[in-house]
Length: 313
Image (spheres, rainbow, N blue to C red):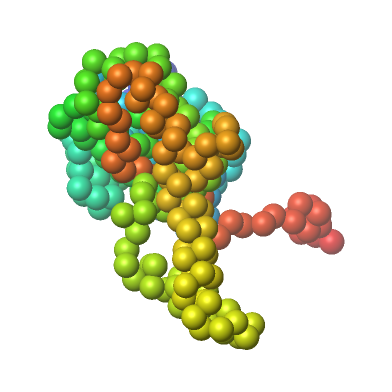
């Protein structure tokens, strides 16, 4: 068995940030070879991570990253078990690294991302990188979903992150004059649209984007409700249904919504006012909104019960 020195343990600990005894054992298992010891620790960390993978991870952050030219952007949701861990520098650095990787490699989907090599370290995949982070942070971590936007012509990608990552929005804009995307006026406009989407959660940009089956479904709901109330069918189809469909658009279509910063106008009117100010046409092409942990069943802890269990009561 190799004779392991304190200096070797110190060096491995500085390289891996693992415990002294773990580093000593890794060196003993690896005959004093630092690189083999690092690999041994990585495997050990992965084993620890597997034990944590069944835990519910519903905290974390929605995070975005955009290229300097504003033509490409990525938004990612990464989950972790506790809000405490989500606020650590280790977790934030991990999320930033994942977002950077997506921006650089542009994977097609989550499975492709996890299986792909880190753009700046081909020796490991994102899946291995995640397991190392799980071992380091001590909580289950999941790269849940991401979206990438790219603008090929005149226009820009912009994002808005609310409440430190609780809600995130990414939107794509097309403009007539590309020079406006670097102005403060356009940046403020893009932020306002992001705030609107974050607050009002629309499903589509415009009425034309609403699928016919959605309109038919809503029409049927309104019609059946009115018939149950004894309304005449001609009144239902001529007046009630059109009015309710208009309200449906106001709730679900971004351009039809009341502008959150000024309810005297809708979003379409706000866009028109900015177009006039900047002297160019602006179109909101698409958007994505992520709410942190939406759809994940969160664990509810009973602190008093936990204390009783630990005390054997």
